[in-house]
Amino acid sequence: MILTSAARSMSADTGGKVTPITCDIRVADAVDEIMGHIWESGPLSVLVNNAAGNFIAQTHELSFRAAGTILATTLHDALYCTLAAGDRWIEGKNKRTILSTLSTSTRTGRAFTVPSATSKSGVLAMTRSLAVEWGPRGIRTVTIAPGPFPTPGAGERLYPVERKGGEGITYKNPFGRVGEQSELTNLAAYLVSDQAGYINGEMIAIDGGQHLRTSGVEDLLTWSDERWAQVRAGRSKGKKPANRGRRGRARGRRWWKSS
Image: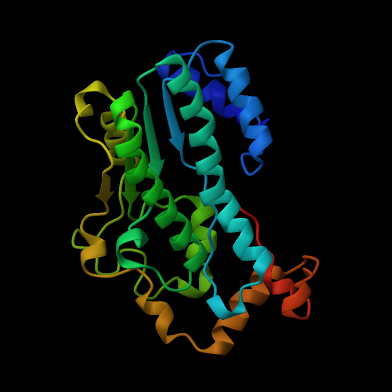
């Protein structure tokens, strides 16, 4: 229902045809199957790797399962989609573009969101590598690294109530504000257009220069273990504990839901 509603809204706004398709992009076979379905109507013009999962946590407290879920949602799915589309483009001699959404953690690193920073850095390495390998075949790879563009889902996980009222999301941002969605969409539209045809293998940061001053988690460095415990307790409220297997006892506070 959510996809259908979103498709109708996008179609009404743009006048174009929007077809919602469900797929668990963490599963390689599912990705390959859905790409085959798309190609029945013709080659995909642009692939946008935009899916991600993230939340703040002390890294030594992460379960393997939680870390693996972020890797699957952020890194593995981007690789699967890129391979499935690239293989078909190359076979059909199609010149196309891949746009991936990353973050400035690929430049600065980012404490307390280590699996995400690791995944995003992996996608950046993929982007740069394929720019050289697939560039001669007419396939461009480009990336965007957005700064603070608040959405309800990400806001709840990255800026829980415990972070509200302090330095805030615009802490040390040279412009003292968050980004506007139109600024982000305009950049994305440009990068996948013919006007950006000579840009390949690059990552464009759009954060008002914030990453030049801060990685964005300095406030978390002052948190006590007790404060972290409060955040974990709030995240796991009402959820069944997860089995941590070889790492030890089950800890329900590790459960989370990807966006």
